[in-house]
Image (cartoon, rainbow, N blue to C red; front, side, top):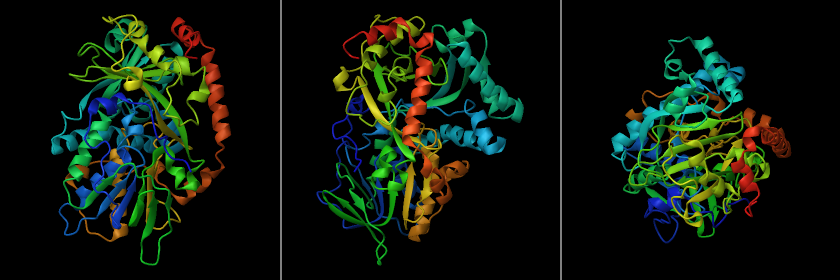
Length: 500
């Protein structure tokens, strides 16, 4: 059985939020029956529950929905990520075009870009914009090497070539080719050039807990933390599936697996399709409003950092990546879900980042974390890598009335909200309930074809070899680790310390 580690590292997002729903249970005992059982209380599970509510709030019958969570509420990937609502507006275009054609690639981009408006519309409608720290603005990709610029600029050039300078998405992406301007805009020392485009940022944990608070005001919704599902039966003659937990059983008419890295725990056919990966993040104290944009630094196709600064009164910079260091230790990242352990040396490496890389950093050479390391200043989070790079969304083949919403490959923020909106009516159709699409979903793109959890796709990917995935990743890391930017003094200083 593959279940989340019972005592994960503490995350700033979770500790600073101080949510009363963290260990919430709607009742001492589980309900005997429900219409929809959702396994997982992260972004995928809760957003699906939210859309089920919105699709049926004006109908004569609303489904009974129960969320079961193995640990604390939203305590896995969504409570441990980088906080960026950052669509891939251009950088993946050549890869996606080669696989799905120019129109297919652009549909993937439109779907991600639509999340900016979707988050704004939802948060405004629910009155939670300020609470969840939603902010729309600009982000940048800073090229820290000629190699990085070649890749980034080529991607935008290819999109321009295929769709023209006047295309609505193309016009959103702006090149900065003057080094002085690149440093000024990105605030990153040594930035050679950059590409800027629209983005958003949010407190993901607070967002999910705000949605849960809304759902908990409805009489048909229940939430149970610390209730791992240990097995899911086949559908019985009465049309129910039985979910077993240490707290008893629950009979459900439909089941949604929103279990991220842990999908294969209950769905063995995904053992090779959704693989674990470990990210390492930190929160660094900084003056209010220091960074004007969210952004990412790129040295090559693997080595990067990404960051976002929170608004007052928090003001911390959330930073992730650390690939200059971690490229030397590939086993820390790939095929690893040990979010109960710190990534060795990473907190120390992050504390040297502001003085080394931020233009005009006013703080000490060794920055201070938002909390002590063991209290949420630095943490790890288990996310997943999908065998073909895309999530699995939809009805599960050969599993009657079971659905999946997982496999977002560490890039769920600009994908999950609208994917869940596409999943909700499929579940309601299976229940035979009447519904009407909420106004919030009127103008957004359909679920991209590569996301569909089809039998053909699942079968085709069964020959994925996790050991080959590890070997290929190791080769990429070793190639990057030999480059000068992965052997700077900051890296060597950590490598020579007791932490590694």
